[in-house]
Image (cartoon, rainbow, N blue to C red; front, side, top):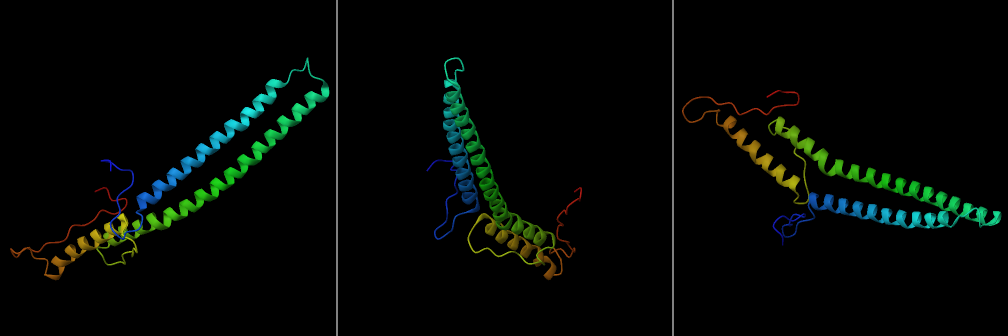
Length: 174
């Protein structure tokens, strides 16, 4: 395997990590965009072929009208297909945004709240071993070490009372 892989290696029995899910989404999106670009290239090539065939001096009025109707039909078809693709892309983007919010942003906010309150609030639970679960476990261990001096009377062994470090909050300049 290469030194800097795009996808993180999963541990045995682990589900896909968030990075893998997001990267897969990006790859699918880019593939769809590539398909759309290729499709538009083909369709516009057909319109270009029709337009170059129009020569008003050598064609009869009926032939010009036929070519004009084909260009108009192709243009309408392209417009309808682009509107359909835009609607489908918007729906997929909204679903992806909701998924990202629920899987990443909401748990991160709970972890920030958990850290700011020194472990007194509820830490979100994760079913699979993702990066967020690993961060939550590290936060849990960290707040446990912060709670330990409080339980021992906040002494550092020399009889001097210690206070645990504080975390900066939003809008705090430090």
